[in-house]
Length: 161
Image 1 (cartoon, rainbow, N blue to C red):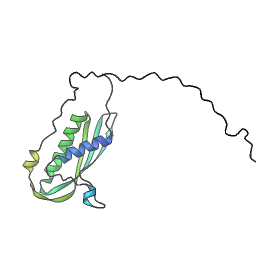
Image 2: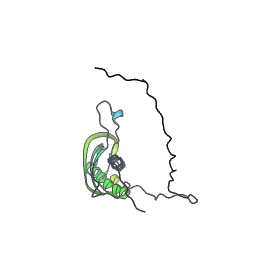
Image 3: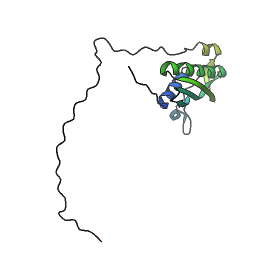
Image 4: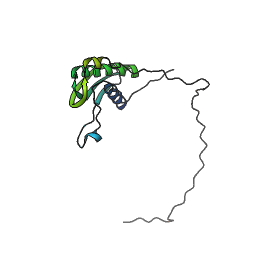
């Protein structure tokens, strides 16, 4: 089968945010809950080179405190570098992570807890159940157009000077 699959920047951004959100210690903050002028976390931006099939990411985080912040940031980098190629086939050339906010956490997030977090979601191949026949879409031949007759609204149009 021939063809190509393209991913939008928005889809890749959402994938990076999901990868970051899975790391223990990363706080998910919605701007609507945080108040007027607040920012949502985690946030991600992607620069995509479609020709080379490569992407680079910039990710901004809010983390709970106390926590192993450098381990959290490294794990976010690792998750994005692992998830994006596994799910899209794109090469990730760079992941910049910045911790922009710390929030009081209920407990300390240790480096061991960060290291023990799941590496990547379990992906399953998409398949159609047995008995379903996949066909190409069919397009009916268009009906011939019938002529349309029009009549002018005004019998005589005068020139205005």
